[in-house]
Length: 199
Image (cartoon, rainbow, N blue to C red; front, side):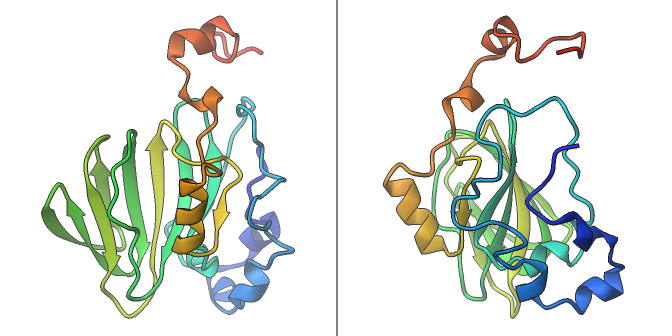
């Protein structure tokens, strides 16, 4: 099983125990890694499970990081985001599809000029090439995980603030790897994917 950036020991806690763990302990720099998470794989994924329990519970809200890449595959990427009170993701357009699942808080989504209130439990899909913005309108952080297809960020990216993320994107330090943007036929030809499931 792929080891995630979130320490396994945390998953042994009950929901009640987890709620009492301070964020500084549950997601300390010693528990999960710093700005570029060098312990996260930077190459194509192995053919094994990546398991993230309790993603729709309080667990993600303990992070407090604006953006953390959790997993990057050949055709998609899972990213955890925390939008602070009065914060926003930023008005942007991606060249990839994006599906966002909100796990905590409330906010306003503006997709192609249309507003939609969002809350924990909601799923929002943003097609590639569509202008979008998400704003936290509530009294607590807006927590979500998003799936990009294909990847949008460096597999090792950790951004503590929106400003840090913007700076890395603008400087070219937060780019999806070439291997995550290859066509299916090329991945099959190079032996990264086959229908036998044997590698």
